[in-house]
Amino acid sequence: MNTKEKTNKASFGLRIDNVDVIGTIKGSTNDPKIAVFPGKMLRNRLKEKVIDKVAPKVKDAVKKNVGGAAGAVLKKLPKLF
Image 1 (cartoon, rainbow, N blue to C red):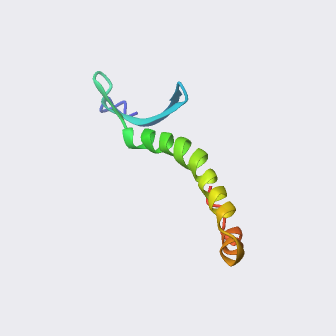
Image 2: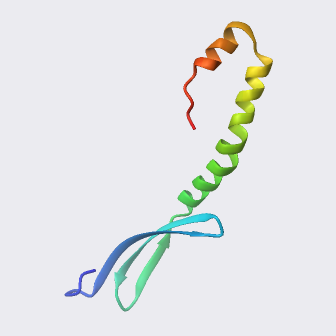
Image 3: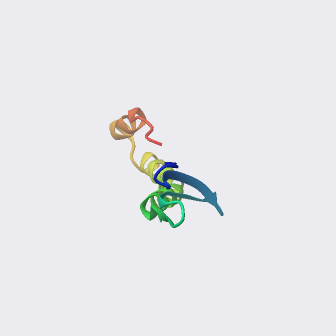
């Protein structure tokens, strides 16, 4: 907060109903502007829905259906998530 110029600039993050809300507050102290970054909220929801729930099931299905050398290669792949 700049008290001489009566301006502020800050980032914030909070959780509302299991959704992470990330944004900034900036402008004059009398009329601050709030900006929310929807892309980050969507990315968090996407990760929660797809990466955490779907990806492990797909990997397990591939392991189950692919045997032999391909199965051995899949087992050696690093865990990404």
